[in-house]
Length: 229
Ligand SMILES: C[S@@+](CC[C@H](N)C(=O)[O-])C[C@H]1O[C@@H](n2cnc3c(N)ncnc32)[C@H](O)[C@@H]1O
Image (tube, rainbow, N blue to C red; front, side, top):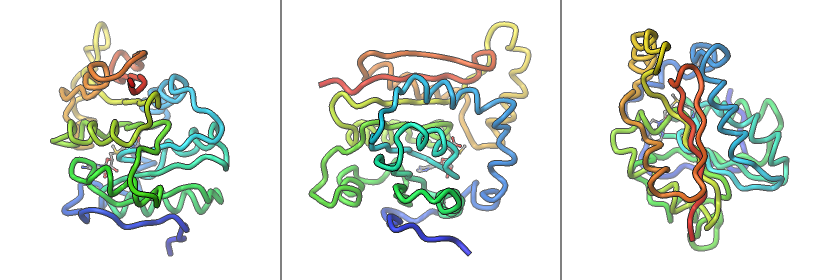
């Protein structure tokens, strides 16, 4: 039985047919976190420079694999708002939060390409819809969304001026690692991601103070920036 969090709030369109529905309980096990994808997550979190007490928005949060790294940095005085359209992935995120005794996690079921930023903001802040997030991130999520530009727009709207934004996503490996392209393509195909979407380009275009990192032969691309005035 799922543990309930005080912050759980249903919002937006309910999930339709979900690629992640059936595999949600196995996601952490099958996601190749330790050999491959955790490396990008760690780089992103380092570059984002979290501060104690930060309010954080994680778009396409899935099972909450970012949450432990974020919790370590923001502490119990911070807040993590996780948005995902899959109820099953959110159920796993909720289990994680309950298991760790985190009471500062708010989970919202919504389609990140279609929800209204104001609606999410009202849900979180209860005071009329203003940007609330000091750090907004999307990890291995935007490339799954056909209209990821909409999600990126909303990420920016929900971020305070000078707040930090981060995108971690995948591309074809480069250099000698290009030999591994078939493997990378298969991994993206299995996960429903478009390996050629390159959503971090929107962050490069729209943000100030952009910093970059990559890992695993260029397969993992990290971009961090701040929301300009
Ligand atoms: C590959 S998983 C990544 C999960 C997590 N961010 C991580 O780093 O492990 C992609 C997640 O994006 C979610 N997702 C896909 N399209 C979405 C959308 N339009 N709105 C919200 N979440 C979406 C999926 O349900 C899934 O949980």
